[in-house]
Image 1 (tube, rainbow, N blue to C red):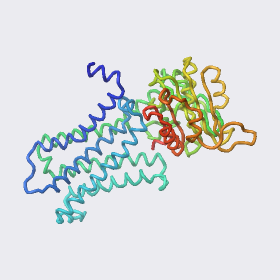
Image 2 (tube, rainbow, N blue to C red):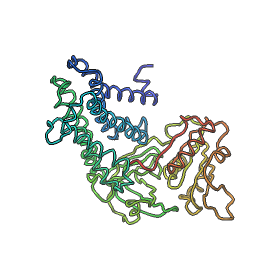
Image 3 (spheres, rainbow, N blue to C red):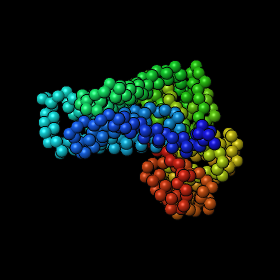
Image 4 (cartoon, one colour):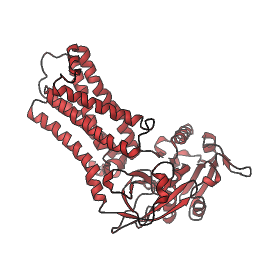
Length: 447
């Protein structure tokens, strides 16, 4: 089979290719630097320190690619995995950039005088400012909730700090000049920096401007059980889009997309209907608590669809086990609704955990879907009334073993719930010998 056909028919091959490309881009600048004779009189640790600095800078530049929502890359892994990878590689880059000067201070103590900001040369000042910007970005990201930084200001400041860290780091490397003194090397790194800058301009300015050309309008807002609100949108002056059930989109409501105040929500409607897109939104935060107040006619904008939490990728599987907790039912409801409209004849098992019977979102709709699907529903209530005859407590290993098929590998397992529940369910499925490749999870919080 040719490489092109392999990539077209094998998601694993495509995902592997992107990993190889990422590694090549991360290490390529360092390999290019080695094509020129090394400066004389410098020991191993000095050169090792410089290598860490360049790799750290390259990893920082690649962060813009990971967060640019490139559809072909996102479709191979999903936003969840990409953002997790973004967080981990950002920390790796931060450690490399931090260790870079520490090694120099140890092997060349005279370089400590470069910390005298007002007397140090401009290249050293840029390094200090880049490190401070990077540190501020890491601190405000890891401890955003503890510092009580709202999502929108954090997102804007995160982008600004990232640009400052990469731009100032690049300026420092140019200023030092030991490895970038040659014109073509400086141009190579300049090209990398320009691509990174273009990506953030595209995500923050160009894409939002394109979104203004395809607005939506709020058609209805109505309550569901569990303090969830359905927000129904209709495309205004365009055809809208279909999506794979289980996917999500970034929603901007009642303001311009250029404001960068967008929020990710899973679609709850049928993936095959482009004329009406619905979201199930639980009122738990400042923005979500205001959903009920938006009136029909309010303008909205969507960036999507995104995500790989969908059964559409598994047409050859024998059936599905869907595990939801609370508002995590939203993408799973879209999956079931779409399957019913498509007359999917495969078996579906839904295990749905909620606080009380009144908190079971889409309860009546789910019962109706039993008429159109081979669907079994197991409700698990944490606070059940005395006359409740169903399952109580939590979705643990014993409960899963009671209901999931004996032949574990014949099903695909989709989990959407709070992080604590998802971690517990994942461990339980692992103990029950469910293949890890058959387990798919969707997180609530992408920030």
